Image (cartoon, rainbow, N blue to C red; front, side, top):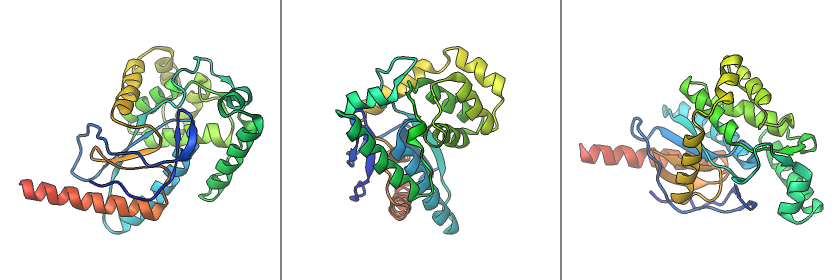
Length: 252
């Protein structure tokens, strides 16, 4: 399946830029042409913007009778981040070269988010967290059928409310918002269940060629990377679904 040729914003370990990555595959088991896998990080602004664009695309496709399942997969933009995270202003000034450049990037992201109805408050964000526990929470939520709601809650906590999503209490708040039992989530986060799995999935994504997020897949085949416009996403999903359905029919 060919990648869509349109460019879109992605986040990578070195920051956010315009890039569309090459093809790669992830393992899937789902009805043919219906499973969407998104590789993302909890602190990737373009992942939140991309989520909104995907939601718009899925609404359009649902009107056409096409329905998809969305699954979220881990990627760490800062895999070497200490468990306790770092002061965001100092870290970003170091990462991007200056406070001024960091502020300019924040403004660019805030403007892009506003265009899809998201009210980012980067001025409230004081910590750049380690995101492994956020990914563990998303995994846990997936076991209970609440993954998308939990992903939404984590994104909102970080980008809209400026909360530290590396903090277990904050993650438990997010889980509760998504309909999960707070104490069960706190107990889960206090252990190390799914820690190795999340790190392994992150590494597998890198080995498969993912270098920027969000990256979107349909039945394991790469569609595109970046927060594409809803119309572009709908076209890619429509086309991909059709191709996979034809392949299944030909093989029957």
